Length: 259
Image 1 (cartoon, rainbow, N blue to C red):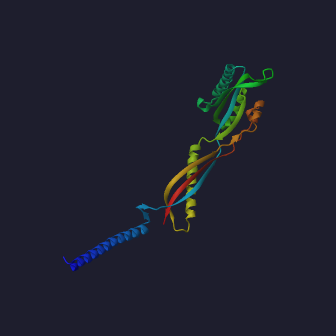
Image 2 (cartoon, rainbow, N blue to C red):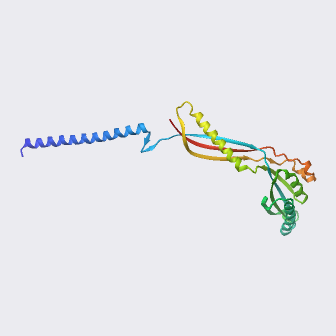
Image 3 (cartoon, rainbow, N blue to C red):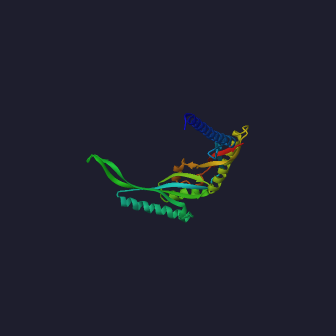
């Protein structure tokens, strides 16, 4: 094979290589172009749709007149020994509980909310230190009752030896039903806010991505004037006014929107 023949073969090989490279580049360029054309009109990245979202807070409030009350009271006894303190407490507590049951309060509506037994100390000058002089035991109760019976029950438990009425708070027997209504109002409020925000943009709400709900019921609490009960006032002279209570619910909603 002479020099001219080798030269022709080399030139042919180079031309063939250039054609192959250009062909491959053309395929890649075409594929890339097709991918961009497909991405832009359809708003997709790796076949996943890109959604627009807006987060809105909505609130729903329901006012209601309470129809039930909770009376929280304490029985407390102090004796020389722990055993004597517990026995004395049990005697008074049982007397109060039996009086409540005789009045018509069911066992399910009487709860012990706390109990404590602790030593009490006094400073002994001769010994130069605090010494135990007795034991105090305390038991806290909560009684659920109709609103109309609160004054009568307070008088009843005081007459049977309780030491302190801590507080009274009011509630509604329809709380769960009212809570659902408040949630509906909150969702409506959230949607209206989202729609107002999108006004004039050309976008519309298309769905909901996430929802979170928070409830904050307001329970009216009566603390003032309870010491007057200990003066043996009749129920008629101890007016109990519950006022109104508020059940408030807030929702955080992430809406999706598009044109």
